[in-house]
Image (cartoon, rainbow, N blue to C red; front, side, top):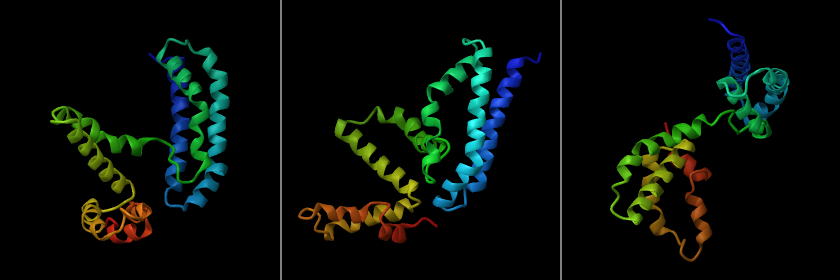
Length: 179
């Protein structure tokens, strides 16, 4: 049986679909171009959603799933538009969710780390791997760089030199770029 809530939920989803569709069109643009296009193309849709939601939400029973969804959205309203502030920000946290998925799956196995130091070492390695992936590096090449270059560096006397090995460093990007 069709209900008014089905129509409200569909309208809300349509707003989201429209934002994600525009975002996918902007994916290949530079950071600055994406920033400008978001403001002209997406921001009006975003604002229209909130205008619509303010009118519709009071008509929905608060303890229903739809009522809870509106409550959730309104509590986070201030933060949901943060991606308009910077062309590098993503519209969703999907990249972060996908990056931590292997960690959450492996968590059971890590319960058997012999020592806290062993668990910390595993977490440190995992963090390096995911940061390398996030910076579009070949993880094997990056580890090879990390294991071969530091012995020849004077980082004990000049700790700032370690910056040269960070995954966003231009030299590291050139050497370890994923193909």
